[in-house]
Amino acid sequence: MMMFRRHYPPAVLIHVPECVEGSALPAVRASVLETDFYSHRFHFCFAEAGYHLATVTAAHIIRDGIVPMVTVERLDYRPHRYIPSGEQPADALRAGCRVCYGTHGEGRADATSPVGRLPLWGRVGLVR
Image (cartoon, rainbow, N blue to C red; front, side):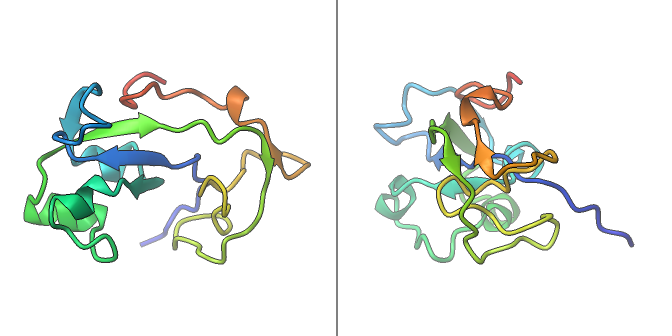
C-alpha cells in the first residue's frame, strides 16, 4: 500500500464540549479529527476531565469512544518563520513547525507562512 505524503495545515485546538473555553463552539463528531483536523492539539480541558494528555490521541478518542463529540477552535498563529520541531508524522512531507505544528507547505520558496492567507476553516472547521 502506497502512502501519500502531504503538507499539514496549522493545528487547531480540540476541546471537550463541556469546556468553558470551548462551550460557545458547536460540537462535531470526534471522527473529524482523522479526516479534517489531522493537525491538532488537545486543550487542557481533557486533563481536567480526567484524561492524561500524554496518552490522549485522536485514534484513542475515536476507537474507544472516550469523547464522541468535540469542539474545534481555529487558532491565530500570526505570520512566522518555519522552525522544524523534530516531530514528523509518517505521511507529512517534513517536520511540523514548533510554532503552529503545520508544515508550511504548498511549494513556497520562502519559509515564512502568511497564516492569515491560508484557507480559513472557521471555528468549527466545517467551512473552508
